[in-house]
Length: 61
Image 1: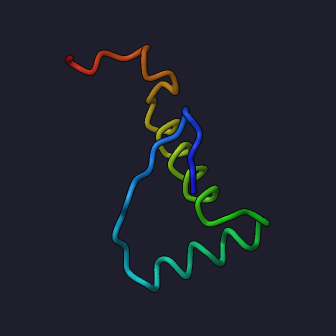
Image 2: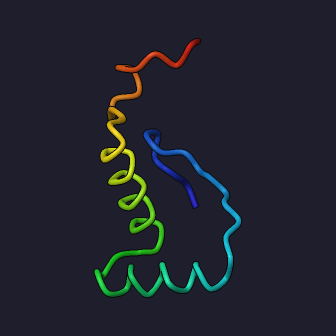
């Protein structure tokens, strides 16, 4: 499946039980598992004070 220019693919290994729990939570919100995980990670990054615009932070490059 092709992904948009603004997205990137990330492979993560998680316990099967956690995957099922996340899928259940996603289903409860009528979301795909992928969309749910992105939303959870965005919320976590926001709560940690990380800017959404990658260009606005100094990555030491």
